[in-house]
Image (cartoon, rainbow, N blue to C red; front, side, top):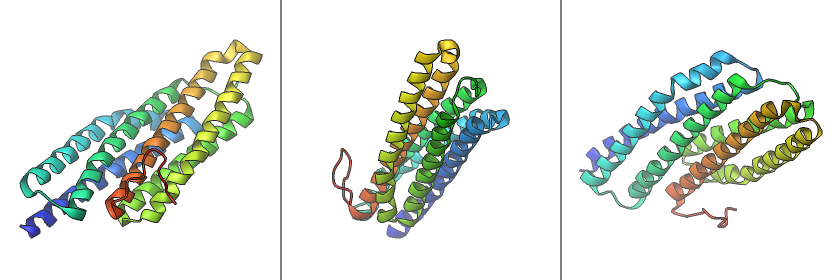
Length: 221
């Protein structure tokens, strides 16, 4: 029975890794579409979204099958519960990547000051690093890396607020490019939401490895 459970968990790990790899690639593509105005990258994100959805369904079905057939306990149960939640966050990150990609198709540098672009690029870099680290913490079952990801979320929140303030001032000063500036704001918000889902993943890794629930501002360090 345990050997069968181990095989099912290995299969589940392979599926969640496939999904996480695709989602990470789509985030990278979406960011490239924004920062480099790369249209083909934006299109690639949209085209692969169905595959993200398909994998998300497969992972959920696999988790439910393991729970029903093997009734795992202790660390195996925590692992499967965490994967169910991580699976959902990965799918949402995929959707947000599509949102960013679509906005990139309409976005232009017109009216956007260099300091705002610098903040956006800083934010994209931090979000990518957070995602990469959270997925590595999942693969390596590394709770400390996961805790570092959770701590980094505050910096992304601060960048989002700074971008909002600067864009608001630009629109007030000259509303000519307001539509384009609102696209930048939407992109910033989507990046901030990705960071929130990435933080959820890191929190689930902590639960998976240590059985500790750290959501809602509970102690992380």
